Image 1: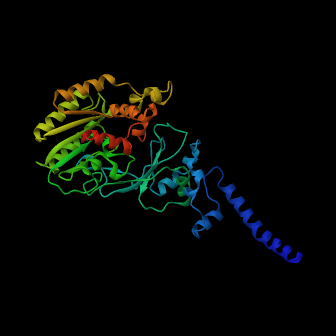
Image 2: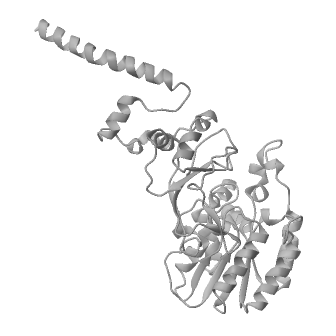
Image 3: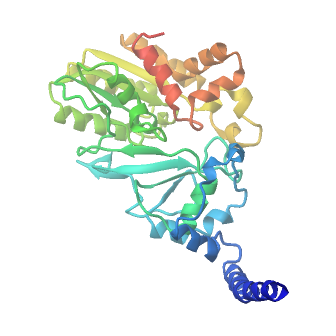
Length: 371
């Protein structure tokens, strides 16, 4: 019996020692770089690894505080066409890009389908979390996949149609058109296709087609360009315009960068295209909505300008034109009253500016008269 035990131990040592030595040299070669052990990678290929999400301890998900954990992956991000948003790192590639130019206007790439999620990190602005996005269904390098599995949040899908418009679901082939225009807030950054303003409106109205003209990162001049292009494409069919006016559209040095100039153009556009109904939705940053939570002195939100006067000017111009005015900041404060906690205002946002699915639903409830 002792000989058998000795033989088994000898065999194990003969097998394990080389593996341990190899893993040690491999780990040293990958020093300070995120990597998977060779044994784990082989186990994964054999389908022998478990699903970490099934662990109840996953409620306390890890985060990274050292930016080098991400910077060390930049070559892999570029190689696999992965985009990283809200970061100081340049990982731009043509494969990762979401935006393009169509008919001289900033647009979304036609027939796009991207998977996206936030990354948990304490190394950057906590109200402007890093985002990762890549072609849906793409097989990533195992090191990237492991990094995203460890630090990534819930995944969403962002799609576009053949016209370079964010996909509106359900797809309704109606003659009359409602345009939803603006930047990334109108676009629906970091929420699913079905959760955008246009999609949630479409789900409640099958008599008209809701077109999402939103594009992330554009200013008022580009929004105007998008609307002019849409006027040509949908000539004589536009019933209504929902214009999402983001706080960062207020750039006096840029065309249409003041409430006065923007509203003068919107009014002329609505009259020319015979648009019967116009709604302007003001979309502030959370630093303006909840300064007591977010404007930490000498930090993050305190550096953002306070635009209460410009907001009041915009509201007055909208109402003077006979248009409907809605304010996401007011909806957020109503949520505070509804939930009886000041932190409830944050539930309407996915980051420091963009609406969550709940925030979009609260806005659409207001627009459709549900509340």
